[in-house]
Amino acid sequence: MTDRQHLDEEALAELQDVMEDEFDVLIQTYIVDSRDRIASLKTALAASDADAFAKTAHSLKGSCINIGAPRLGELCLEAEEAGKAQDLGEASRLVAAIEQEFAAVTGLLEGFLVR
Image (tube, rainbow, N blue to C red; front, side, top):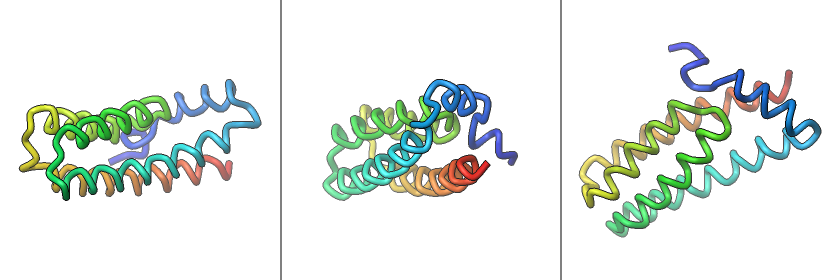
């Protein structure tokens, strides 16, 4: 796997140009907010609340796509669809995959800030 699969650096460069001095705040906010949403996914899963699971996955998906994390966005889409279908059978696997991809994306984003 290449880094580009995890992170769209071109999209991030465009965000950096638009956000200028606020870019670091945007990235830090995305990371904190995403951690909270992943925790909410786990809470919804533990409660077998497919609706909350779908809504949280949808919200996280949008953030991931906007920040330039397409692979993570795709995993969130799968989670959203599972929740909408009231099928949480694969949800544990999806949450684990989301957590793993988020860790990779976070590491890359933090590296992007150092540049």
